[in-house]
Image 1 (cartoon, rainbow, N blue to C red):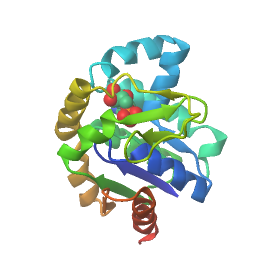
Image 2 (cartoon, helix red, strand yellow):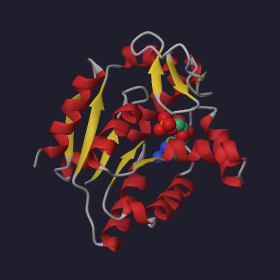
Image 3 (tube, rainbow, N blue to C red):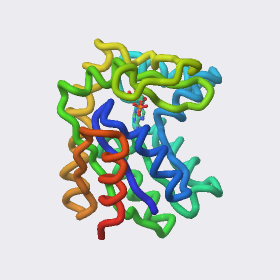
Image 4 (tube, rainbow, N blue to C red):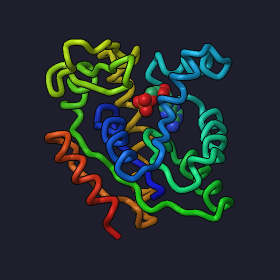
Length: 208
Ligand code: AMP
């Protein structure tokens, strides 16, 4: 399985990707998680990326493309993977197409998780991650256990979320016609119980 999850911030890509990767036994490739790991380690790449991330802007294409090319060479990525948060621009998608054809592989599907904008701000602002497990919760919709060690992502505050939504519509939404034109896009309603959305994503991925 080689697939992509796309959707606006707060659509549930990260949460769904974790469940789906476990079911398929494939790695989740989240460029957001990779960039946050660089930032936490204080690498040069991490420090450069943080300037863009804190403003809700996209990190320059080449930085992300190089990072993904390296990731695709790792042994665990040879039997499949699920991208979450990559590609985010048409330039990244074109570069991925080039990498895949050099590797002699192709994508099985691209799932778009759709959620209306006005729901997204509330979803993202209530989101918290457990530092220990990496599990994602929502203070209202998916409450964490009392002993969770919670943190809020620096870019999950309201003003930044609105900027990220604008960036999604301007720079990432053009991927919808891009993958639709290649016969790869499957749309899934991202509103509802977490498990119900997982079922929809799994169905979309198993569709020919
Ligand atoms: P995410 O965790 O996917 O919401 O990503 C958090 C932030 O990391 C984004 O708002 C961007 O600043 C940056 N980022 C993650 N993935 C990409 C990507 N594919 N291209 C550019 N920037 C990215």
